[in-house]
Amino acid sequence: MAFAQLTCRESLRAVPAKLYHLGIRGVVSRATLAYANEHRDWRIFADFAQVLIAEARELYAKDAGVADLSQTIYALDSTTIDLCLELFPWAKFRRTKAAVKLHTLIDLRGSIPTFIHITDGKVHDVNALDVLTPEPGAYYIMDRGYQDLERFHRLYSAGSFFVTRPKTTLLVRRIQSLPVDKTTGVRSDWIVRTDGVKTATAYPDRLRRVRFRDIETKKTLIFITNDFVLPAHVIAALYKARWQVELFFKWVKQHLHIKSFFGTSENAVKTQVWIAMSVYVLIAILRKRLALEHLTLWQISQVLSLTSFEKTPVNSLFLCEKAVSEDPHVGKQLSFLDF
Image (cartoon, rainbow, N blue to C red; front, side, top):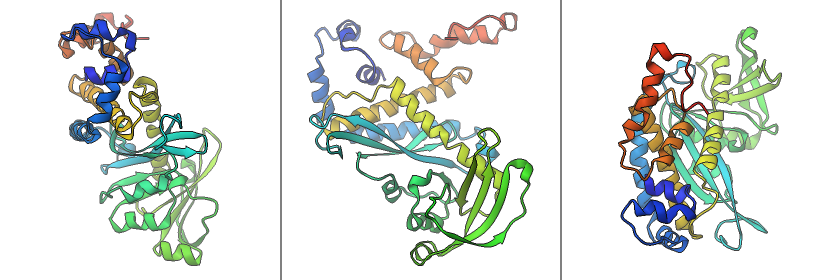
């Protein structure tokens, strides 16, 4: 974890002094780190991250799900990291710009990334559904950029459920209207079929169309799903929870600094991304194991970044703060982590 924080966060000027405490007497140059990232297979770090992900998901499995559902709920989205075309010619995006895309599936229990597919910037989001293995009974929440009826039907055939917003070009034909409780914000709940030769062939089964009025934003949103059991307002709540993946991307970019890379090859980029994901999951595991739910992941990462090269046991770093927070006589005292 210390090496991961070093490659993703620390300034190169601080490297010699900190590495001295690890027994390294010489200066580690940027070229040395770049060489390591380019010549160590990124799959090593990806496999290690998958081991951590499995452990983290087990720890968060008993957390309350969205709308108290017992099924696994995933949010699928992608984020783009801009790169220099001259340095990263393999990551084609636009005529004068390079970029990589992180197609990411997160388990909304704990916001744990379970699937990450790294491509160049030109790959469309919907292609991530081709390399995704559907989980029967699970819900997949996606924005309208993932609309593809053939791919949706594969999810349906696998026993999975999807919730998304349809594009304006999707034409449907109503075959049944379901009763709605307008106090929940639901305006209509229809059973529909796609209306078109190609769309009807791509998705020959029924769909559900829910129109919802958001009281906070005053916007009317339309959702389509292949779930016909959940109440309509729960369908809307599922889609609203999709924003957790946006917060995940924001956190990773801000605090793990994966916008600059040691090495310019595809292997180097994937290596550093998977190291960053391992750091994120390690912090999530630490938060659960040490019962630090009163702290945010950012607060935990700040403590670890300040002591990453010390020999202090990790659990003792948070004992003082935890004792203060649990003492009833100092309930009004500010925590030293309130910043």
